Image (cartoon, rainbow, N blue to C red; front, side):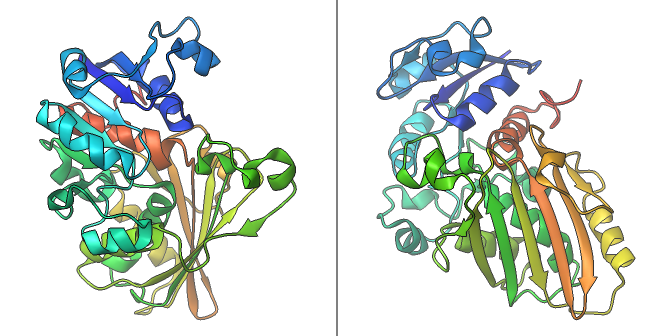
Length: 336
């Protein structure tokens, strides 16, 4: 068994991680940490009562190294970059769920996150943990930058069409909607029930932090400069992401040909389903699947994609990365 620790175990993504790891055939959860809580894990996540007998502890990297082989770092942005180097120095493998190691350029990180990066030498050399594109780079690494939920939806939807030369890499519009859990478990006024229920609104228009991440990863994957306009929306539902993406065709192709190209691109990727129907968030809720389809509307290619923001958009892909780091089948913990 590979020993796994969850750093920052009080949030929604940590709960989803624990639910997957508790049925994983090769993993044993040996530590759960919090910087402020000391309660039994079942007091914070009642769903785990009788399933995991651990208390939340504030453990040092050296203490974690004595209990775990791999750490899932669920700390907030900025806090993660302070902790990850110490975990690596202690000999641990790390899957980092923050955004601290996703971007290649420290200046870009500072612009979009408003903080100077304190571990800049790892930017650009840390593998981006989207297995559908970079599985061959993940195996054998010590640190993986787990992708974000909006970014996973957008990148998975666009990669086959940009890499295949079917759509122009510039002028792409991504119109995305996320459930409230995407904002985390910390109390905020706009996330109160009376504020978000029966309400639908865009936010961070032109300034969302995932835009440079989407552009960077698609540029790396396709070998050409990608430019997008990304607009997120908060939707009054617990979980899920839907993205409707508009791109200009680069060469003539029928809808059937575009769907066939997407299916070929993902033919050996177990967690991407290219479907004929228009996917909805309920189709992928509580799963590690991303559902994608394509339509041609007038002079545009319209790509539609859905995934569960807490699983395929965070914890599920983190377990995929864990599997690749440790040499397990990528589907371990998901399929029997």
